[in-house]
Length: 200
Image 1: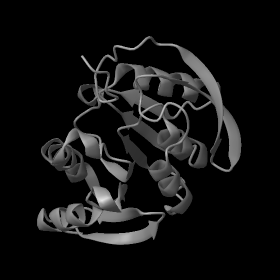
Image 2 (image 1 turned 45 degrees about the horizontal axis):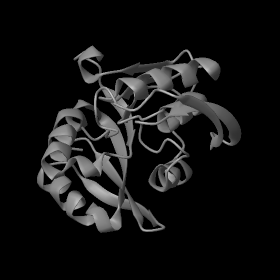
Image 3 (image 1 turned 180 degrees about the vertical axis):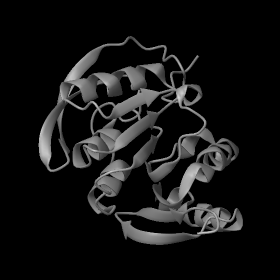
Image 4 (image 1 turned 180 degrees about the horizontal axis):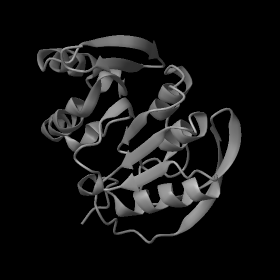
């Protein structure tokens, strides 16, 4: 079986190593491993989101959807220490790395879980995501249908999507689903979409 970052249990050996990456304005050491999305660095799309999305609120409940080894969730936790940050992924290795990285950075406000472990009544003031486009359109749409309705009435999501992987068609689809969506910015071939709660 091929080893995908969206596998629940990656087949490759869990050989961890430390890399230095820019997070929340400083260079920080984090653990990465094969079998997890962008295991060598912060990928370009995530970098665009981290550099160009607005400063998160000081407090609230935030979600990183498809967290990988944690660059988005860690940034949210570092920038907003009074917030509760949930990091969700199907990949157990990714979640374990996110937990380890949060602990090493002293973050006690970050919870890395599979979807079933996140209480149904939790609602999000902010969602940041580099969504897993390569899982296919149907799976991606199902994922967004599951999580975007959990925005609070004033909540907002920022999604980074490569232009040539369908960002504009995704924007139209989100609008058709009742989620007001606008192109927040466009950088290096990536769009950052700002998605408001349905009815917002």
